[in-house]
Length: 266
Image 1 (cartoon, rainbow, N blue to C red):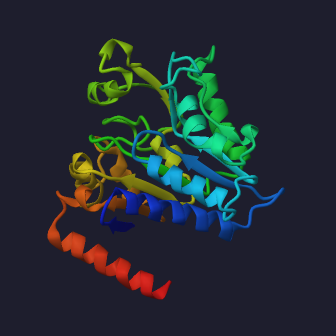
Image 2: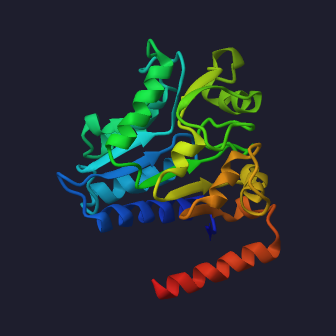
Image 3: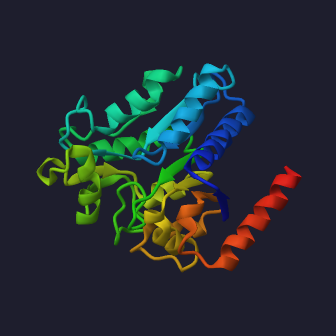
């Protein structure tokens, strides 16, 4: 497990974008060899997406041979609703890059058979050869995707009822009106993300500090689903200084020192 601590949100976003960019370039994707990328939504990855768009427009990065799988989608929200994750991804990322729309996979929260939709999503991931790099964010309660506290750590893509804390946190996107916030979502499972060959989790802001502490300084706990990634062979947590406020000083110093050595040897 690796913890990368940057001074602020912008630097954390840039570091994450460079990492994704380098992984895709090093992979050398082509017509018979697609790089498969898992992607999150929310406010945290926006800076990373902006940087990836910049790298694409500068000619440094192509998504022509990249397949993406998004973590989640609300149930019952029209696809063209401004707060649907379909809208989020197309407005903030996909329409600005050269990805083939057929290669951008997002769960359908309006499917006639929601369980069949989830099963088909898992099948598509398997047919794509699995996820090379799954990028995720977390909620203040340590949930990854919509795997709320108490979720099974071996769960697969499924229908989930959202926790009240999540609904309250998402109300800001719905004019503060709780009655407009969806209460259910389709989400990849913790086990789905754990199957990825590599996982990168973005954690920024003081409001995520306790979740980061739970993620790396305490044991694996299904009430803090992000903690499961302590057991993944290749996990990188990317955070800003504000997110480290609950960590022990020696933990922060250890990882900063380790990252300094790694950068020297890169």
